[in-house]
Length: 223
Image 1 (cartoon, one colour):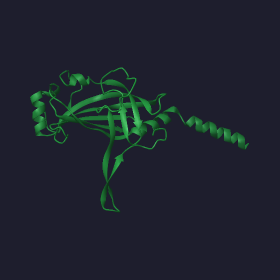
Image 2 (cartoon, helix red, strand yellow):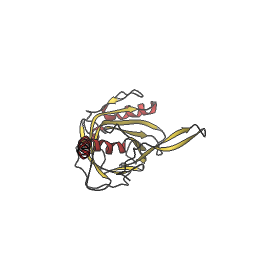
Image 3 (tube, helix red, strand yellow):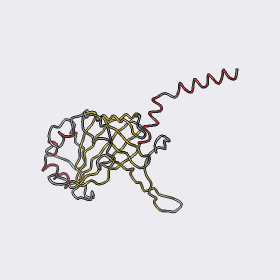
Image 4 (cartoon, one colour):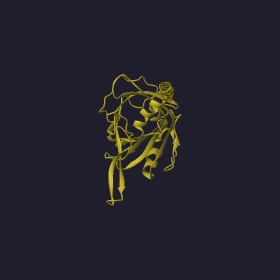
């Protein structure tokens, strides 16, 4: 009788451990804020540098902000372009490398300050002639540059992702629309490699801020 009860319990546990549960645990590894760091740009580009902030949340939400700067050190921000959508992550035969399918559903931009507003208006950025500081403009259907290179929404991006837990995320390709999935990852490409955002956490015992990485969930299958 005890052996029969054990078999029933084992069957119940196996039934509850569905592939979707495992995929959810896997996707949770990458949840959190990530940054590309400062990437310098060269003429004839309008901006001197940019930084990509990537927020992956609740195991499915994709939120990417490309922040553009007046200076080469990413200090004087002029504006940003925001890509919002969802992602799906699944395993591959290669250790620590995963398939990631991204769908962008909304594309917007904003001028961060008065200088940014003037810059965007002088450029007629993405075909918009009048900008308001801090207000997001929907540019998802724009056919003007540089939006033409972003792609009209919705669009999908088929990619590869290498995960180094708590250290980096590296993509096989940039966020181009309806691309062919890459077959390898160049892990040092500056616009495809992301490090965890460093947060200042207040320690009540010392009265000081401590810096820590944010925010990956421990997962034994990823180093």
